[in-house]
Image (cartoon, rainbow, N blue to C red; front, side, top):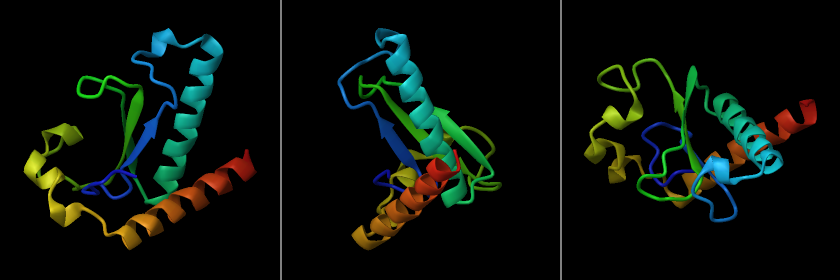
Length: 121
């Protein structure tokens, strides 16, 4: 779970080893990584009632394979567009930083949703 939750359910999915590019992975590992990320994104979608998921793998600020998974809902931004158009002072405000207890509940929701998906697959 992300430290800031302007987009409720915002999740980071990190590759365990330090790798900077998808094409540096073997095909088998790349496909496993993408499949696992997709499952976590689907669990996030269900756990937090998303209408749409945004997926981003950038690596410009932190050169390590990691996905930003944003559950999106109608009207969740003052203007229609990608999450990065939101004013950073709003997106990273302490007002949207969950308490440790809230964060734990969010993790439990995501894990429950992921467990359910894995049982159904």
